[in-house]
Figure (tube, rainbow, N blue to C red):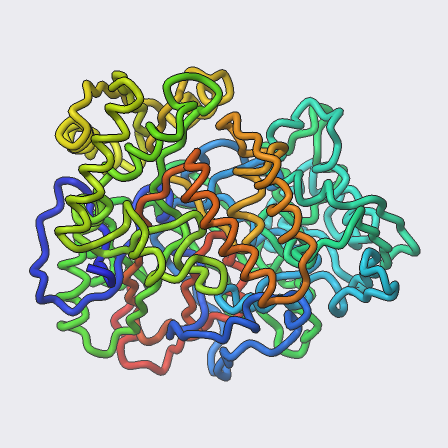
Length: 605
């Protein structure tokens, strides 16, 4: 089933295959993305528009509609109230926190259309200038008059020490320089936590030309450099908010220059944001955005609670958590709902330590790759609502291997005969390496992963004839164990990213910050470095395809399984509703507004 359906946890009851739903909800860590807004249709885009930073300034196809009403507070389901690791915007790896940060902090550039790769100015007045023929120099001119939050003026409470330090201060080029150099500083006691440091290590020098101008020079041509200025960890912070241990893990330090201010964080209950009346508005002050007074992200993690809250309009938007049946029924009951089906960038994977036996033998890794039934996973996790995944997330159609090619590769093939051939080859390879015992460490979240453990154990035992054991660990335990080499085979969930480089370089380059497998492949390193230096869109796409083929044919330190699709609904009074396939886009709610003339609005509590 090439166009699979989506999202179910282990205990959710099965949907009829006749239902014509193409999308699904978001489970586990994915729930946070409910905070983003904007466009109501998913469209195909031309590859060139998606590939190259040189076309980033082109206008987005989405056109925001006029605003008739101002005010009101949006109510959304989400995981923003669950802080998994840290609030520090440069150190967290948790998608829901990125979404909160994106409403509070600004970047030099931002994604206006993430699916098409359209990058536009945020703090910058215009796209960076590249005056030198070598392509290494970027001149960034910042908007004047951008100021850090002053929440006390809006929330009618005494200013904190942090607000007294920076509140109302104008953002300058020094803030940008500090935010990048902080993530480049290998002497920091927090250095291992800067997971996007590899992006900023492409920088050779940062010069402050004047209070609003920087000159950045890269060490070598870097095709995704504009993406690095718009990526998930590119938030600009004030040095005054970072403590002596190089950390800003406290809500009082969440003072940025974005469209919303962080009002309340009540863990596992809700996270609330209010309008920043002094926001710079992307150079369009006459629009006086944000239009809404604020938004609240409610920590709801079961279908019954979300459905009940949405039907009574205590939530303005909803998506399934486990069972898509209620969303389908809701769409039938309320034909005026805004309905959006959209893929999600996070995915399920297995990862190996290849610097120790028995996983140092690619024949064993390939045997596990072939024995893993991806279609079984789609059905078990999400009732089929999702797609099989290669080394790059399928939602990035400009970068991922085309699905038709993926389905021809062993491990992904769909017919019964092909599946049987893959299983026979898996058994042959496993026996050729001596039939070692296997132990799999499953992540504890989302819950459907650990619930799938017995089924996966049986699958490997059946196909390989192996003795298989498993255990359930938390993500911090898995990460620490991977670094120490005590987790040679992990089965887990991971967040997806935006650019080709995000998916490949950190995981597979010898010096990549997420390379916890012990992989060091000179040929692969050269390929990864080549795609970084290739500015031609079609050639960079070709290099990306070649890297993915090489990974599948010659590496397999990470075995990628499946990724999900969301099924969204929103009440028609929620205008400019725009879900996206990635975390970290809540700034788009600056364009959202509540249509109080809509007949349904009157029944909203």
